[in-house]
Length: 328
Image (cartoon, rainbow, N blue to C red):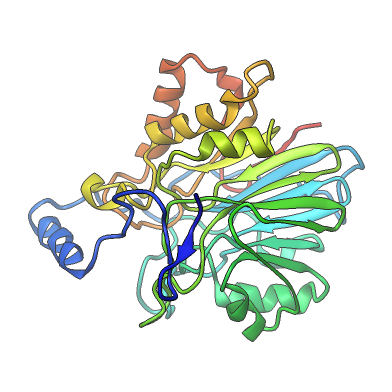
């Protein structure tokens, strides 16, 4: 099963996957009036670490990852430099004078990025697709290839990108010596009035220089994570979201909670049970206040569930903002 078209828009193929509409948005707003969420932490509330980026490129056999914040990760895989969902603006909103504001600045400044060969975009929401950042990256890296889900190319093309590859779920592309596969995600797209689900959403599996990595994108839980693991693994490194999940009645169709993130990890690793599990970087938390859970809760719940199921604590990476790890 994969996303398909019914009269034009894309859709999730699983039951009860249609995102909630305006009536439920208003219900959520009413509930918040009587049940105030935990206050947003002050600016700079979470740990930060100086990045250890290699300029201009990493060693031939090295995989080096730097968490910049939210779903933005810089990967240096041999001589290949790539970034996922590059968001550097202060607000995840159409304008910069209102909307969700950063609690944590990017762990690596946009101007400090090494030369990029590849940009992966999972979907068109403002906390994942940042127009000012795209335009600056295009100017700084005019030869970079942008790999996006179906329908998303028109956005970045209009902002200056020229080397664009659009993929449907399970489609692959050979780019810069690596193979990229767009993987299923349970989510939706919407950026402006009238464009809901007019572009697709996805994750990406990447096989390059002997390494296998997977970026889950933005997703709720669905039954095809095991297939992702069997078709594209075994993975050395995975990036899975853990935040923006409350209230559960509203968010369970679009975002996983920490316990479901562990379940995703179990699913993608299960097909290769004889292999050592991949290192998991927890993403999509601590950057923007998008939902109602305390912003420091996702990593605590994630670590607790990880320990409950008996996974190796060294295989879970709750990164400080800007932190870099080398996998060899």
